[in-house]
Image (cartoon, rainbow over all chains, first blue to last red; front, side):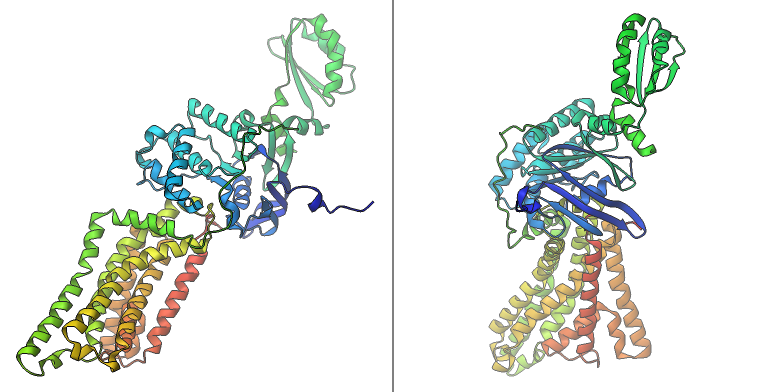
Length: 316
Length: 284
């Protein structure tokens, strides 16, 4: 059987990092990252200084990789300005001329993308409508609230309808109503088949957006994929299950002989029992009968959210 | 496996880079600068020397009509234009300071450079776009009035200026206008890229050029050493202008030295811009 070259067999992913590193003098901001980001929303997660912004700037072609390769829409991100007709970037810092109004800001940037004046105006209005800023289009950006500034930044990123969107902390500083609006917008863009990369250091922001995450810490990718898949991969990671029962000691008695149970802790109120296990599936199987006998009323796994996964991976 | 909605249509806009990519940058910056009345006032002021020189040439030609041979009171060759450009140098300096100080500094301060460079254009496009703003301003007060003055001079004193042996004067006027404009615009843009404050950049540019000119003047006066003009960009431009326009030279230094200094300043400015104009500030 003849071998098909990998490049010919599979279409290029929207964003590809191949052993990409970036360092600033002696500081390594991103270290040997190899990953591909498919269409849909991907959360780029990590604490401040983890390398998220460097990751986005490499993808946005604003930095050259010190080593390795970064490709966007099949072309090298660095030195391929033509590809940025199809890419939108929402940077973290406020990036505007305060003296312009919202409409002027958007049309000015759309002109850089190559549209004529009428098309710029049409697209600017459309983008303003999407982020609910039409009423403020003639107001100077200098007078915009934090939420409005964030939304106008998003508007400039989506106004030219890019295939790839790179959003650096897009919901930071937004009030709950605007946060919901922006989250819905990002989800919709992802559902439309665009590749949306959203960076954040706040876990619940990412959780609200997507289950697909890329965890970065100290410039390295700690994990990527569905957050549940990541958890499943971590067999050795002690999985915690907390349960509330009338007689939690009954449950403890039933579990104490199980080899996968690593520890058990009783709550001070005498109602809660926290169990650590190396094999969650076996634990859930073993819990079935004792849970009924002990009158379990609540049961949850506190470490199934992103935060616990992230904490575990960072501490490892 | 995710299943995506089919509503999304592939991006329809062109993919190839346009030939003139810098123009929207220039246009936007010019629009912002020209919206300031004080700056418009300065631009008008930039044409005052032109009016003065037109009157000067007219007055000398009028005398010439009264008394035979008086048109010879007009300086020979392009000395009138060399004098004109010395005035324009000062006005160009003021205009460049007010118009150019914030061109890059403001983008660095607001982070707008991030957004610029996320568009389909290169850093070179960005620099050309900003440089064109300053060149347009400077050429408006050098090239336009310079050529107009040349035309007026020919019209008022054809016997004096409309000669085959002075045919080089028109191109020399244009060339000097370009040299002057570039010599002010490039360092102004480079200094603007070194600061995040337009005020600091403006003061630095004006202070540097005026300071060096003063040093050059003082040291030159004390030591009577002709090479001191090389300390000053203005003096170098003026010396080159004298040579280009065939005017009596203020300095005994060959024109090639000021030309080399100006070329070095331009190269240095471009090097600064190359290292400073980037979307990411690299803090070591």
